[in-house]
Image (cartoon, rainbow, N blue to C red; front, side, top):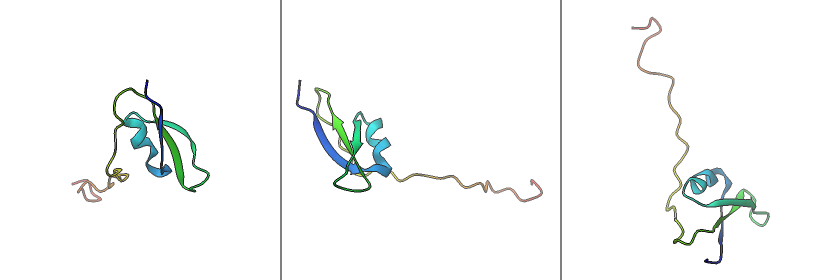
Length: 68
């Protein structure tokens, strides 16, 4: 088994790393706003080049106040 790989990533996007197979370890106390994640699988770690921004949907679906 490979030695676990750890890295510090912005906490706001940590769920994207978790979805890619990384494990959350703890807050990164040396870098406020970051968290430590860990890759423990035998395969090569998944790297995210850009963490997707949180997307929001508009409540405006094109209808008018009368519903038409």
